[in-house]
Image (cartoon, rainbow, N blue to C red; front, side, top):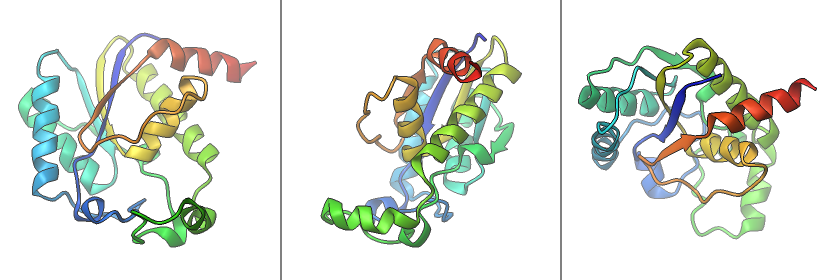
Length: 183
């Protein structure tokens, strides 16, 4: 398994700005978010890229298209496995400044974190295997990226990601995780 893989969190939406949980609710980018996507594209333009994919949600797809514009790449695939965690009844709720206990209570109806991790690792593994030896950009969502990377790093907790933030995935950790799961 050899490739270069970077994950990019989509640009900001109105709900991000308001501190609302979006989950799988399809909220479009705002102007700041479009600027963040263009900034990620400029940052990624220092290297050669072969493949550009995103989640199926519009905010990720638009971010990918804006990045692709700077790189001369076309968004080739939208993957359901890269969608954000489904937050159930908490989607649309403002959680900024809520006490942790109240947020935890809201998240009781959310997709379990373990399921998000399994989905993230499975999707990224399939992506890398299909594009062996390629340089891949995958635009996804903050919680999916954070939980997946945390798992690959053996439970090391990553800070929440900024909109438009780029995270390089260590392919050897992905491979090690797959090998351990197979045994």
